Image (cartoon, rainbow, N blue to C red):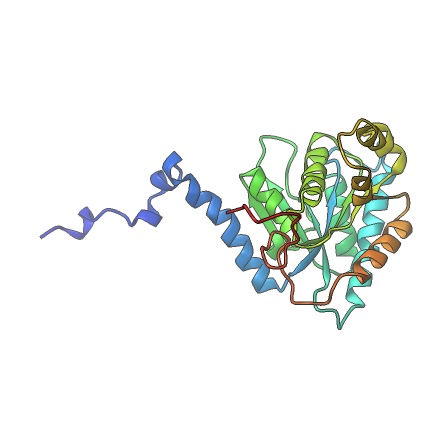
Length: 262
C-alpha cells in the first residue's frame, strides 16, 4: 500500500505546474473569474473609469490635473450616492497606482464612497495607492485581462493627461466602440482639451481618411470637473435602466453585419 507521504499534491495545489507555461490558460482564467466573483459579492455593476498618468503629482507643472481628477471623482461619488433608486450606482475605478489614479481613488474616498483599483504588477512605478477600498483592490499580471475589466463594467471613461499607458487604454476603448464590439455606448471624456488636442490630432485622422468623420463623436472634451460631470449626467441619463450587463456581452450587441465572432 502506498504511504500517504508518497501521495503527490493535487494538480491545483502544485505550484510548479500552476506557474508553468502549460498552465498559462488557468492563470488567465483566474484573472477573469476571481474579480468576477469579488465584484458580484460587492454588488458592483457599473463603474466610471479614470485613466491618466501615474507620474503626475500635485506639484508638477500639470499638477492641477491631479486636483481636478480628485474633485471630479468626489463629485461623481456624491452624485452616485444620491441615485438611491438607480439600478446600478456608479463606482469610481482607476488603475490603482499613483498620480491621476491616486487622485481618483482619493476623491471617491473623501466623498465617503467605495472605489476600485485595478493594479498591475510592474518592476517599478506601479504600487497600489492607499485610497482604494481594500475589498476592491485587484492585482493583475496580464495587461489584457486588466484592460478587459476596465471595459467590462464601465458606463463611462474619463481620460486625463497621460503617456503611453493612457493612450493605449484610451485607444482600446475607442477601437472597441468604433468597431461595435461593445454591447452599449460608453461615453468617453477627454479631460484637458489643450493637452489632448496637442498630443493627438484627431481631426487630421479624419481628414486623411484614417477614421470616419462620425468617429469624432465617440468622445467629448471637458475642461473643468463641473463640465465633465455635466457630460456624464447628460449621457448616463440616456442609458436604459435595465439589468446590468457586461460591455462585452453578446446579448443585445449591435452589429453592422452578420456575427462572425466565436
